[in-house]
Image (cartoon, rainbow, N blue to C red; front, side):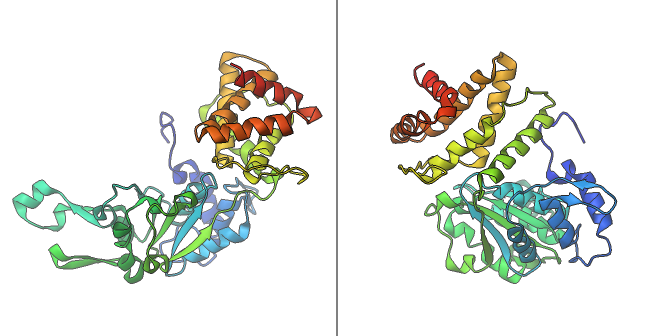
Length: 364
């Protein structure tokens, strides 16, 4: 593994875990061309301890039943579509499932409004095409075509960002498991194990609607936000710890309860209600997901470590991050945050340092 790279694919980062899982579950039945058995894939995602004492780190802290549905879907004839608001681990789950199932998460199509049908099917090396005519050697294979030939999983990110007419190129691929190449008078037939895992932002609904024909080819799983404060705090702390390990920097410890209070604000602003349900207010439309909280905490710790400061200045960095996160949406969102600070945060006796941090940043 090249240490100069900022980030490796999941199958490289977790190669030891995947090898241990494959060996430990070798007597379990697994679909053809799967690297790990379904039971091993589940443990890879949810974490656990093998019989030999080897510990598998958790990749997801949510509902185990949801992950079981995902794995079962990939064993069926239907593709898998993960939808949800930003920051609900859609991409993270998709990558790690592909790593465990195919030992290859690199077969990826990034959906944009400019994604054309050739990105889903194939294109041509036009220099070779002009000089030699249509030949197999001139074919430029898409990640989906390569996945079909290998019997692997292909990922499609932001499916709802791809124009509807381009999306529909997937219909015959997902239903027939073949891809015709009229120019060569031939077809590609997928090997067993081929499937597609797609993700879509729930907030992008209406950008490019999926046709009913395409929706029927997917089993759609809604990725929820964490159910409890404790679960969300655990996710934030775990991912921040992983990021610090990747950067190989020893950041100072957080003050007890700092992440809990930041996540509390996220949950209250999302729901428009205090955690004890005693006060209600207008909810925020900003993207206040666990991923955003992770980013704020990680950035604040870097800023505090590199440029100095105590726990109070760390609160200011947290406040600054939350203000920037909400302020980028609209002035109305900023007004909502200011009202929340004055009506909720100010009145909490043990939140005085947070109130002062917000006021300090807002008065700059």
